[in-house]
Image: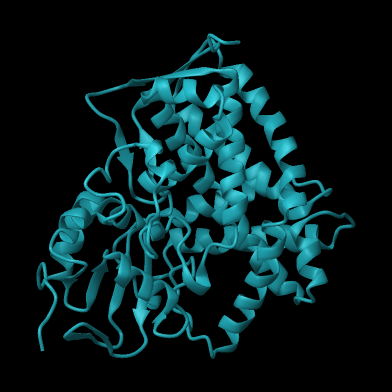
Length: 410
């Protein structure tokens, strides 16, 4: 039986090559075909039809078998743990997509963003200050959304502590066996997780209203499931939206004419296109993994049970027919008539594990970028010959500064 193209036989050697330049490694591999065997038993799936098959087959044919600690878990829909998790996701999805709740939240978010932009105007702000400020903004934003009227002052710092402790684990291309996971860095993760779980559980019990925790309790979820869903939401909406906003700022800072269009007639539609193009070109959560639950046929060959499947939205968004051959260019106007097929545009994944916070994320991105553009003109200043990309966790731009001035129309 025919096999897909294979890059090499040594997983360790290829993992080292991958770690030196993850994005370029995967994009080069995708040129060999829609499915490439990177090393025996590990596949990159980049063709949009095949990507769609993987995403819709989640929980059945293709399983998510690692949690955010990279511990092995059951990904089978028939397991009790997955059924509990999917019930939690369903309850959270309604609250995170509520139009009335999102509109109320948008007003408060715009006010906070406006104050930040006022502090930037007239200054050249470095990349570190920008990302730190945006992470504070988005972390506070999702904390308020999760807990409503309660005092959330300590939650963002606890979530950041957990994310920082997770970095050495999630950034590595290697997964250590369980017996090696008692190093100081792993103990730090467990301590940070306990601290966040304790704070979330206590805050969820505190009298208050209008929070995601209230919606989850009304859905009759057990307290421990409420805590885990809240923590998952806090971590997903902490650094990821900040990175997406920063990428939007970078591209707008490169394209002054696009900023001018956002302030003109039809600016709302133009902003929607900018948001879509930013998420296409620079999806912060750019990689997901699945394990094949059975032997799966693709064309005239089989992917064996237990194979590891990698799907990179960053790669697929560049090679899919809807966007190629200009998939690497920032062109918001493409969304005037773009009609991507299933599997071609996947910034929030797809299938039963589609990101439940997609509507929240889109609203947050459009609110913050819109407020920035209305109150400033941005011009990017690179530190070197080209922009650098931190690809070791959430995709983040580096080695630049942004000049903010009062817009001419102001």
